[in-house]
Image 1 (cartoon, protein in one colour):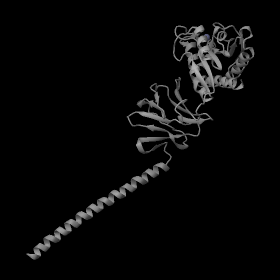
Image 2 (tube, rainbow, N blue to C red; image 1 turned 90 degrees about the horizontal axis):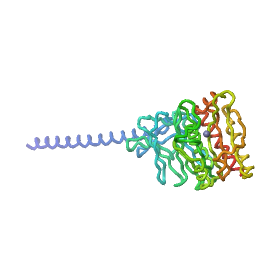
Image 3 (cartoon, protein in one colour; image 1 turned 135 degrees about the horizontal axis):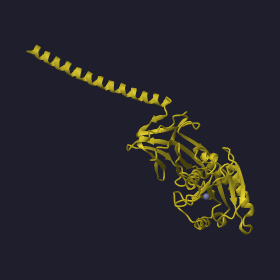
Length: 355
Ligand SMILES: [Zn+2]
C-alpha cells in the first residue's frame, strides 16, 4: 500500500514537472521569436527599400536626391517644395489641411509607387498613411499659414506641387494673373484647340513657381468662365498687386508661315508708368523666349483695354501663334508649357525684385 502510494505520488510529481518544463519551453520559444522579430525590423531599416514600416501604420517616404523618383523635394530660404508626378489618367487627387499637416489623398487604383528612383534619407516630415483604407500622403507643416497645394493637369502626367513655408511670412510681393478669354469666348481656335484653355493651363502652372519665389498669386479665373475686360481691370485695381499679367495666344489665319513667336504688349496712357511698363514688357519677353526655340516677336505698344484700365504695372503676353504649326505643337507639349510658365514666372520675379 505504501509502495503504491509512493508510485502514485511519483507519477504526480513527474506529471507536474513535465507541465512546468513544457510551460518554460513555451516561454523560451516566445522570447526567441520576439528577438527574431526585432532583428528583422533592424534589417529592414538597414536595407534600401523605398518604404519603411514604422509604428502607427506609417510608411516613411524617402526623398530622392534628384528628379528621378516620382516625388522630389527642393527648397530655398522660404519654402520646401515637394513635386509629385502621377499618371494623367488619375484625376482623383484631393487634399485637405489642418494646422499641423497637409494630407493628399490618391485614388486607390492609382497604384502610386513613391520614389522608384534613387533614395536619399528617410523623412519624418512626409509619410504615407494607410489607416482608413486610402492612400494618404501626409506632409507636416512648420507654420499654420502660407502653405500651398497646386494640382496641375497635363497631357502626359499630372503634378501635385506642395509648398511648405519655412518662415512665418514667405510672400513679399503680389501678382494678379489673367488667363485670356473663357466661357462663350474661346479666343483663337484651331480645330478643337482653344486659346482660352491654353491660357488657363499656362497661368495655373505659374502659380507654384511664383509662390515658391515669394510672390503671392491671385487669378482672375481658375475655370472656364467668361469675364468682361472692364471687370478684370476693376478686380486688378481693387487688389493693387505689384504686377498684373494677362496671358493670351495669338493667331493669324492665312499667314501661318509668317506669323509666329512670343510678343509682349504694354500701354502707357498719357505717359502713365512709361518706364515701368516698358521695362516689365522687356523683362517678360526676355524670359519667355529663353527656351524651346520660341521666336522673339518683340515688345509692342498697343491700346489694349485690359492693360490700359489696370493701374498697377501691367503687361499682356501673346504666347505664340496657334495658327503656326511649330508654335501650336509647342503649345500642346507639357514640357514646353512647363518651361514657358516657369520663364514667365521668373520674369515677374525679376521685375518685382528690381523695383
Ligand atoms: Zn486673346
